[in-house]
Length: 171
Ligand code: S3P
Image (tube, rainbow, N blue to C red; front, side, top):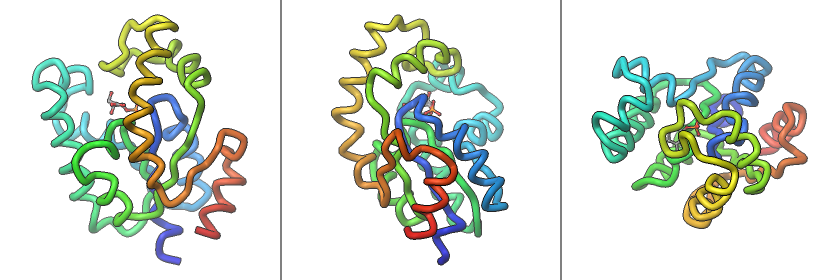
């Protein structure tokens, strides 16, 4: 099936899109693409610098242009930035691009992970655990309306390469 070679991982910051995406790409023998890294490369600025110097709206526009430019690419596993599917028509664009998989995790798990890994994430930089939990909870209320439209919603227990490969084959 065409979609088995174009996989789009969506989910909150810290949900493991890059971690699982890299492994999955290796298994499927297709290129791995990380949207944040590609945007940083293209504009020669870190995500933090883009947020600081141009603001979030400009970043979201860059994300949308990035999705549109991927249309011609034949095969890939794409790890999207956590906010990418939640702006404008991006979720529809992503769904047209390939098989979308939402890596769903609880606020508690996400907060624990993000506490240790927030340096290049301007929206949560320097947040403490309680602040993080509040931030995640509030954002998820809005963002899950988009994430849940993914072709596949994968719960924590199924977030392994074997389960991913299985659902992709059936997807
Ligand atoms: C963002 C998530 C980040 C990055 C930017 C904004 C978000 O990507 O795109 O910091 O709005 O959730 P990751 O999900 O890869 O951390």
